[in-house]
Image (cartoon, rainbow, N blue to C red):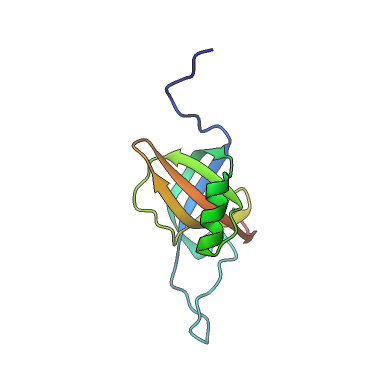
Length: 117
């Protein structure tokens, strides 16, 4: 069987957000409880779920985070490793990003369930 030259993004949809600078009374950054607490960057990007290789797990361990999920999306710009991802009702922190000519690879760490209306 011949492999398709097109990438597949059929494992789900992800929306990408940027944290807003809302502060508490004590001047600490407020944790988002819903998508309304963040600024939308990309809505409903289709993604492909990738396996977590040993190299990925070692990178996560050396960088001080737990790799929950690794996904690929069509190449995107304007997103950094400080941004957040929402899949379903789960909030993920983007901990590391990698790119090639066609794809962006996002290394995600689960944060918590949120209201994703």
